[in-house]
Amino acid sequence: MKAFFGSMTGRVFLTLLLGVVITAVLTQLLAENERQRVIEAFRDQHAMDRAEQLITATETVPASARLAYLSVANRPGIQLVVIADDLPVKPAPSAFTAALAVRMGPQYKLATIANRPAACDVPRIQNSMFGPTESQWKGVCESINVRLRDGELLRLMVMPPPPSVIAHETDYRMIIGMFLVSIAFLAYLVARMTTRPLKQLAQAAKDLGNDINHPPLQLSGASEIRQASAAFNAMQARIRQYIFQRTQMLAAITHDLQTPLTRMRLRLEKVGDGELRDRLVGDLSAMQEMVREGLDLARSTDTTEAMQALDLDSLLDSVSCDATDAGQQVVVHGHAGMALLGRPMALRRCLVNLIDNAVKYGQRADLTVEAGAGAARIRVRDNGPGIAPGELARVFEPFYRVETSRSRESGGTGLGLTIARNIAEQHGGSIALINHPEGGLEVTLVLPEYYAGA
Image (tube, rainbow, N blue to C red):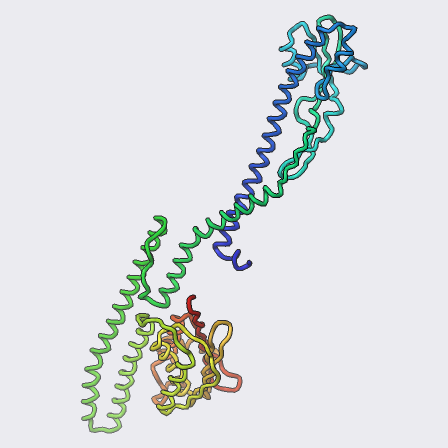
């Protein structure tokens, strides 16, 4: 769950869900307030009509029968009663009183009582989607002295309507649950639709790193997605063309240099001074080795070789056997028991470089293989003097060699580890160097496991 909400899909889903829920809550609050306002406005209009009818009908009844009539005609919300006490009135009538006075005519004298009836301040229970809430009636609630045309003074009391006696229990929990489920489903669909092109681009970038010749993206979806896919395909084509041209250029240079170097070697054989001849031949051999290693460095960044599933134990066994046949002391410990997705020749070159370095500077190579956490770890340890801590990172730089290796016996070009690291990174792996506590240098190559169908 944490990984889902940490992903782009989860964040888009959560943003959409919260946005819709918050919008729905605010809309419902506004709707509840508007509903209450409409009810109050309708009640005020109804109260005015009822008050006019009640006053008019009461005046038509003889004075001796008015009390009996009012006891029958009065309702809980609108009542016209005989004044039992004298209450102060407002200097100016309320809006409701003024409107009622206009409708009744100048023959009736109306005055608003200063004190509101006690029922006006009684909290009312209101059921809504958010549960029962207490609120006060905000509509017309007041007492009005009404002097009839015959001179009798009565009091009109306009109070909040009584609560409905009709039972209507609505299960809002089910409504809210269905609403949240439907919104969550739609938000998830929108999040998937939104992030799917990003995932496709990310996967395409990953595939590009593994195989420069990976098929281009299909141009589908919205216009913006098609435009981004087309730009990505164009970038892939340019990178592929750039790598191809660079490799071809270096291959041509190497090929052209081999001929004059070979002629120089043949001519050096005619030099009479044996010591001078040996020195010049050694320098020429170093130049030829640098040319070959430079080409190998360029090829280490080339991903034209096809990716395929490989058995790591078989690959290590083959490399170690070849090294042993070449007179190198190589021992393999452990078994990985896993498959890798990689380029056979490139991985072989990576392992050969690590073994060659161990044998060259430490006389032997001890390989320890183990698997865990979805990756294989290959540790190559030698019996050499190790490397100063400050130079552990610099040995990966092209043509860099530590001072102790700068001799004709163990020199090299300083490209072996650079090539090995390039190959490892192309396969999603890594290479790290440490000085082993018991002596010697230990190189750790980490390569991810291959899962079929992933």
